[in-house]
Image 1 (tube, helix red, strand yellow):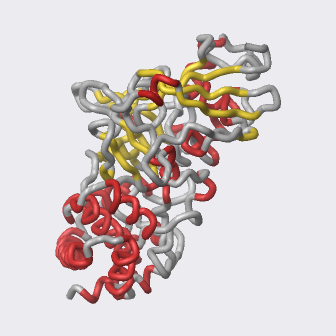
Image 2 (cartoon, rainbow, N blue to C red):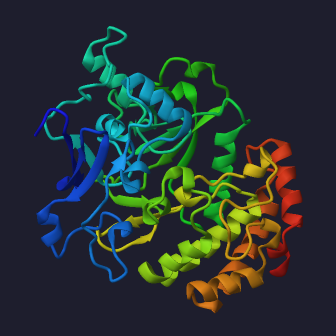
Length: 412
């Protein structure tokens, strides 16, 4: 290996499956190990590496600065990426090196490590603040999950308290901090997740917790106002095993910045029709209707995921990031196009029937599930809307939104 070539080993469920190699001109290329290719019972890494005949794709092109979209989608976005990159002394666009420092606590069952054992990239300027390398590494790894919000892996103790591990690795909970821009975002998400569960949607255990009850949060967090949201990770089992997941940006092989425009809910439905069960299709419809009713305009490709509980067969992962975004930003459009329209006030039963036909879903299952979801939502929202820990403005905004939706009226 030449000095200008560096290699990261990619592991799935703790077993090596491939490598990411950085070439001298800052290009990177992924390759599967021969053993993984030849293993007929191999665990699934991603639907994006299956061809139209269901065979494993083994030839990948090189990417300049970035990495293969599957791996790129495991990295943080936006301000969180900037923060981490700054601490690591790495250009935020150099995704190979971000994977180097964050690879021990990625979403799902993938871990990434340097083959030569170095914990930090050789050309990262991680001594620029005169800290010890191990201390700097601890700071870098404290944030390590994909997404744009400040969030951490955390461990829950026997008393129900949460602790951020020193190295950010091994937690079975995600802690989301209050927003500095919008009011009561953790409370909003907690309320929507609670209502979703009552409607019949599969959600992970979710709790509102005081910031003071979380140990080892970074400096400056004490200035935030409100509660934090703790969400149990569904990609971690009780025995600390990792369960593999992938979001639909990974499934479709698109970069995070393309999460709103490169596919539609119809496209997600097409994948579910092929890869999953009728139960998953019904759950998809339930969530699609629910997110429309609460005015969640941010259900993009990265907010839908598949889970591989048996390592080989896909199912729709539990719901997450359910927030009534219209409480903060007026937006009539859903995160993705449904089938023919993106407007929530044009999401009708007819649009659902069209989506079902194009995606080859059972029409009766789709329509019946949508009607049941609307009916159930109306009952629960009427009973619970005043009991939620939400600002009055948020509740009123959702009430007004519901009245404008054809899908909310058609089941009545």
